[in-house]
Image (cartoon, rainbow, N blue to C red):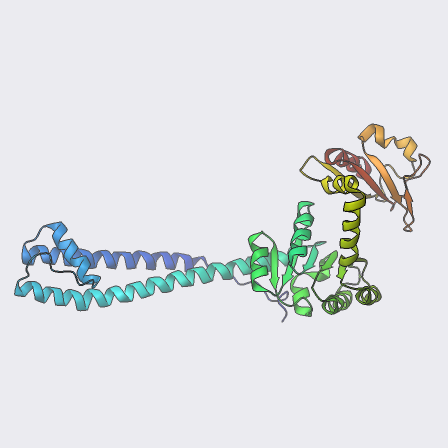
Length: 349
């Protein structure tokens, strides 16, 4: 049975109550031992309460300090009784208390993993993210900032823990294995991003993912030209060539520094500028109208940088006579709040 098919464990709240009762019992026994020793020294030796309590503590702790006051024969006998009975019982209590603490930590860990496994099957249209390296961490944060639901698959324990600490749903496992992809809810996912360090691993993930969910939109990275060709043949929808991007970024930073700064500042902050793409639905009120008729620049203060037709043709800086067809995609630029207004107009909200 795969991790996705395994039914979630039934919560057992009585275990929490049981641990609390056990902790209270241990505390009561320890208090009873201290009270017994203090009362014994007070009755046998006639000491004050604090001296008797101090003698009880150093006896139970086996510290070996000198006696508070000289003991009588009866006091020695009581001390021996306290050592054999109290120290032995105290050792058992401390061991049981430590076991309870460890069990509690383990139970919280298991409960946290179980809650994750319960949430993932309920997701639909989410993004499965393979690898939480430095590049993956930045991309995952950007996607989540834009409202995407993510499930991370990571085999490295420290990186998986880092992803959990940042609030992501995490599957600990090898992304090249079917069970890991199924546990991440791949059959109901809309997108797959695989950023594993080796092209061969990304290739295997893509081939496996296509078998599980042929409708996936897949994004991957490639380290060299050979990897690019193989990943394209495997059916990747969007290929990111890290070495090409790095080289282009370096050249742009030298030749066009102001343009580079402009694009780097896009989307910074909640009210910043942003370049966004908006897909026009079939029932949109803007379908069949021209950009000139809509006057989007005047009504929403958003610029239309490009229009992608339903067949994939891109028109850069479209004219006012361009007709907005159902299924086309608008590439827009403007303030985030203004883009939200444009989305409300397109979706008829």
